[in-house]
Amino acid sequence: MSKPRTVESRSPEYEILGRNIAAAREQFNISQAEAARRIGIPQGTYSGYETGTRRVNLSMLKRIADCYGVTIDILIGSGTVPNPSEFSTRIRNLRKKNGMTQDGLSARLDLTKQAVSQWERGIREPDFATLEKIADFFGVETDYLIGRTAAPAALNQTERSLIAAFRDLSPAEQRLILRSVGISQ
Image: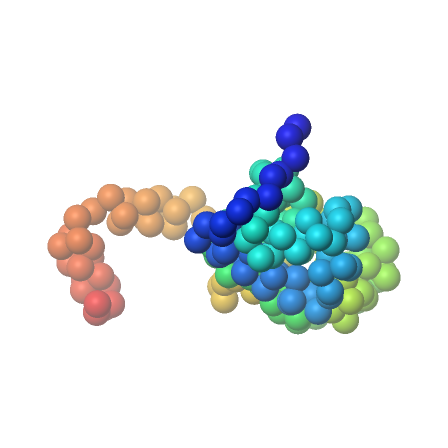
């Protein structure tokens, strides 16, 4: 595995990536030094990623995304950085809506009560595997849990098929369908 190399001039792609990495770090209100420590790299290397003067290889990009609990798409600019407090609010609301205590939820997910408590207080967030487990348990999408979407429920197969078929239509056909169901565009 080769090390990422420093580049002399910034490319627009690495500037965008750097801004997104910085935005993800700022959501957690931690310093570059702390971020570098958590990822296990020197602070100067991490700083280079944020300024866009250092190229980021895919394995490092994955480590950074994992550190912040975001997808690589978010870091490269295809998504928005989730708000950590949104997760704490949503998991608490889902737990209460389902009439569960923190003890009950932790038992159902095979986790400690402290983990659930820390999530709800915004102190910590789950790793991706646990986030998927929570989403499956409550029947919601992971994007909903982290605040990327407002709709909690995942699409069923019929809904996904309808969307796929709609996307295959011409713009004129799409407008016709939208008008027929009372959606004006």
